Amino acid sequence: MITAIAIVTDGLVYAAWLFVVAIGLSLIFGVMKILNVAHGAFYAFGAYISATAIGLYFDRGWPAAGGYVAIGASAIATGLIMGYVLERVFLRRVYGKDEVVVVLVTYALFLILEDVLILIWGAEGKAAYQPYSEAGSIDIGGLAVSLYDIGLVIFAALLAIAAIFAIKKTTFGRLLTAVIYDRETASAFGVDVSRVYTLTFLLGAVLGALGGAITAPKISVSPGLGVEVIVLAFAVVAIGGMGSIEGALLGALIVGLFRACAVHLAPNLELFAIYAVMALVLVFRPHGLFSPALARKI
Amino acid sequence: MSVRHTLLGALVFAGLAACVPLLPLWLISLITIAMSSGLVVSGLIILWRAGLVPFGQALFFATGAYTVALAGLWLKISDAVVLVILAIVAAALVAAFAGLLLARYREIFFAMLSLALSMILYGLLVKSEALGSTDGINVAQATFFGMKPRGAAYTIAVFWLSLVLVFLAWLSVTAYLGSVAGQMAGAIRDNEIRVEYLGISVTRLIHLKLTIAAALAGAGGALAALSISHVDPQMAYWTTSGGFVFVTILAGAVSVPAAFIGALIFEVIRSIAVAVLPGGWQMILGTVLLVTILFVPNGLGSLIMRKRIAGQGGSK
Image (tube, rainbow over all chains, first blue to last red):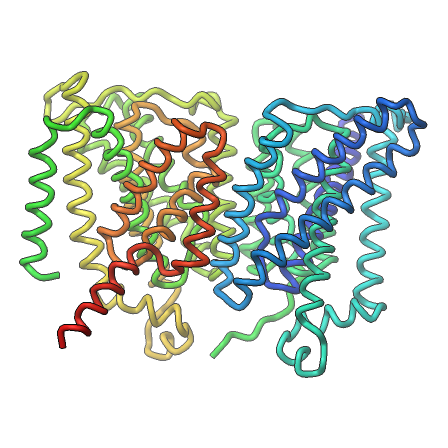
C-alpha cells in the first residue's frame, strides 16, 4: 500500500515538473515549428539564477515566504532576457529554413550556453535547499510528503488550466491558434506573425527557466542538468502530440507515473521505461495522442 | 565512379598505408578515430540526401562497439576482421528492427525518435552491471589473421584495418549513391508522394537506407572499440550522435571523401581545443556549428565544389 502511495505521489510530482518544462517546448514547436534544443539551456540558467537568488535572499535572513517570490522573479527575468537575445540575434536569421537546420542552430546555442554556464558559476554544484526545507511536510498514509512538492503539483495544475483558458478564450490565444494552423493565412488576415513569434518564444523561454527555477531547491544544481531535461521534455511532447497543451499534460502524467512505477518496482529500468513507453505510444499514434490529422503535402 | 577514380583512391590509400612508419603514434591513433567517425558520417550522408537527419546514430555506433567488446568477453572471439563483421551485422540487425518504426517518420520526428531509441540503449547500458554499467568494458586487444601485434604494432595494425574499411566504405557508398535507389534520395526529399506514384515504396527505401547507414555506423563503432580498447555508455549518448551530425554539417553531404576530411578536421579541432581550452570544447563546437550553418550552409565541401564549378565556367 505504501508503495502504491509512493508511486502515485512521486509520479504526480514528477509529472508536474515535466509538464512545466514540456509546455514551453510544446508551445514553441506548435507555433514556430522549431524544436528548441536551447530549452535545456533556459532550464539550466533558470535553475542557476534561482539558486543564486535564493542564496542571496536567505543569507540576509529575510522571511522564507519571499524566497518563493525570488524563485519566480528570477526565472521570469532569465527567460525574458535569454529568450529575447536568442530570438532576435540568432533565430530571426534562420526562419523559413529547413526544420532540421533550425534545430541544429538551437543545438549549437545550447552547446555554447552550457559552457557559458560553467564560466559564470564554475563546475561545482550549488545548493539552494532552503525553500524546500522551509516548506515542511505532511503525512499521507504513513508517507511524509513535502509541502513544496504538493505546491509544485498545484502550480502545474493551475498552469495547465491557465494555459488552456488562455489559448481558447483570449485574443492572443486565438491569434496563436490561427498561426499554429496556418501561418500564411493568418498573416494574410493581418496577424503580425513576427510579433506572435517573438512573444511565443519569450513565453516558452520563461516557462523553461521557471521549470529550472522550481527544481533548484530540490536538487544540487550542477553542470549538465539541461541535457537530460531536453530529451525528457521531448519524450513528453512526442507522446502528447507536438504543440498541444492537453497532450503535454497527458504525456507528463503518463511519463511521470511510468517512471515512478519503474523507480519503485524495477529501479534498473528507469530510463528504459520512459523511452519504451514513448516508443509504444508512437507505434499506435505516430504523431502523439493529441495530434490533429495532417494532410500530406503533394 | 570511373576506374580512374578508383585507382587514384587505391593509390592514395596505399600511400597512406605505406607512410605509416613515418608518422608519430598519436597521429595514427587520431586518424584512426577520425576514420571511425568518418564511417558513421558517410552513412549519415546517405540519410541526409533523403532529408533525414538522425540524432541517434550513436545507437548503431554503440551497438557496433559493444558487439566487439562482448564478443571478445563472452565468445572469446579475438580476430579483428571477424569482430568487425559481427559488429556490422549486429548494427544492421538493430536497424532492420528499429527501422520498422523509424522508417515511418520524417523530419523532426525522425530525428527525435532516433534520439529516443539511442537513449533507450544508453539507459540500458548505464544500468546493467553485466554490460559494465557506467564504467564500460575493456576490450581485449584483437588478433589479425592469427598474428598478435602488441604495442605500437597494434596501433598500426588497427590503422591498416581502418584504411581497408574506409576504402571499402568509400567504394560501396559512392556506388550506392549513384544507383537508382541512391538517386531516389533527392526525389524523396523533394516530394515523397510523387515518388510513390512512380510505384516505389518510400518506407522500404528509407528502411534500406537506415540499415546501410547503421551498418556503416556499426563498422565505425567496432573500429573505435578496437582502437581505444574500451567501450562505455557515453558512446550511445546523444552528444555522440550530435558530434556525427556536426561533422556532416561541417563537411556537407557532397561526397564520401568530404565526410572523412570533415571527421579529421573535427578530431584535430577537438585535440587542440582540449589542450588549449579544456573547459571550452562545447563552446568552440557550438560556435563553429553556428558559423557554418549561418555562413556556409552547404558545408565546407561546398566551397570546394563551388570553386570547381566557377573554374569550369571560366575556362569555357
